[in-house]
Amino acid sequence: MSDTDNDTDTDALLSRLHLIEDQPLESRAAAFAQINDELQARLEGGDATRNHA
Image (cartoon, rainbow, N blue to C red; front, top):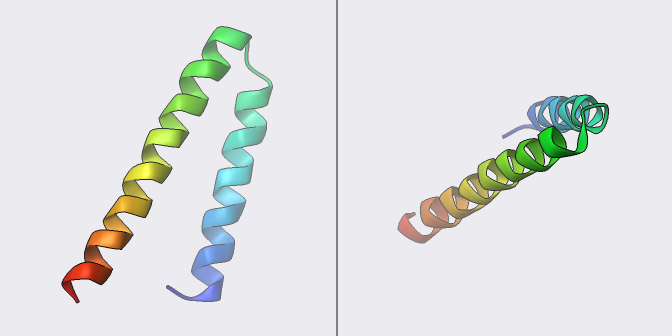
């Protein structure tokens, strides 16, 4: 993954976080949990890729 891809991913995440922060508390909790699950899956997927390489 290039630096440009990382910057794009970071910008997208920050945009999502800003949108979530403007939502009511109940909606924020669910949205943050979803982001947490997505990030965890991405991190665990990266570990599996490195272990098989």
